[in-house]
Amino acid sequence: MAEHVPGFSTLAIHAGAQPDPTTGARATPIYQTTSFVFDDVDHAASLFGLQAFGNIYTRIGNPTCAVLEERIAALEGGTAGLAVASGHAAQVIVMHALMQPGDEFVASRKLYGGSINQFNHAFKNFGWNVVWADPEDIATFERAVTPKTKAIFIESIANPGGVITDIEAVSAIAKKAGVPLIVDNTLATPYLCKPIEYGADIVVHSLTKFLGGHGNSIGGMIVDAGTFNWSRENRYPMLSQPRPEYNGIVLHETFGNFAFAIACRVLGLRDIGPALSPFNAFLILTGVETLPLRMQRHCDNANAVSAWLANHPKVAWVSYPGLPNDRYHSLAKKYCPKGAGAVFTFGLKGGYEAGVKLVSNVKLFSHLANIGDTRSLIIHPASTTHRQLSDAQKTQAGAGPDVVRLSIGIEDKADIIADLEQGLAAA
Ligand SMILES: *Cc1c(COP(=O)(O)O)cnc(C)c1O
Image (cartoon, rainbow, N blue to C red; front, side):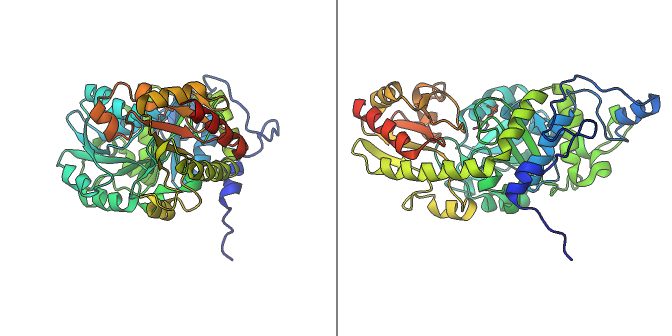
């Protein structure tokens, strides 16, 4: 008989967890400790030499974080996960494993504003050069590839514009170029979209958003799909060359289809250091248990609110792929059939001033720079998150002066709409 495969909701609650072997505690304990006692000298030596798996020091790994890693990897359909301190830390650790100074990566220009900053500024200091491509014209990804290209980076549902990237098409370009495709799946979560099924080799997350889901903890995750051949052309020396600090082992040879996650842990996290606190891992794990219920409600509410806004006289346009006439609707149906997420933008006929008035007059909505909370959130990107970008960059990133971004919460939808109605009356 074929082995029974648990469904998504079951994995969201159980994957990676078991009753604590010492106390029987059913919820995953918070292992709030910096370090772990060795059995003896030989045990310590085998842990440090990567000959045995086990806990050494919480910067490199922690049992509470390990449950979260296994759970997200299971939900994404990957071979292994690595929890880190934030979504941005995940991006640094991934690129650290792939890039040498002077290398390039191709990235979609429709990204979270913080990622655009990180790629344009901090990454340049490491000598990692971003080349931008346009998800509305997939051929620009192929044209951007050079012999120095080491990766392609996209978001499944892009923040903030409600852009759905054609993951399969970009994956085909990555395969042809012989580089891994990295997909930031923060806005979709694996409940709505599983990028690995469409050819992603690495998935990254800001756990801060829908996965944690309650607006209480910053965290990040890297998921290794186990699909990429790191040794083929020796382009990824961290994975394909002997490591002097680990007795000359070659990570890809030794760890096979989870070598990338190991490289991120034992070289990236060990040396760069953005470890997730076990307490945050616990809060995020608790959030993940209800992910399917929350995401469905987020999407149902976003569908209702976007349809209502589309008919409002003060609203010029609504960009939500869940709307039947949206230009991304067919991609949304393919990649996110259960719903197009809960973050979207709309344009006010009154422009910049109307945007400022709206965010100043809402009461149920919180005016802040976050998404993926149980609470409904609002921001006017041109005056906040995207303020540092030039006007041209703002518009390219989907954050022009008239644009308002919403992250629809799981409150009663009538209350969400009533708040927008009174806010728009004031605008
Ligand atoms: C928030 C966010 C990030 C960065 O995550 P942090 O946890 O804030 O560091 C990256 N990508 C996307 C799509 C995000 O929304």
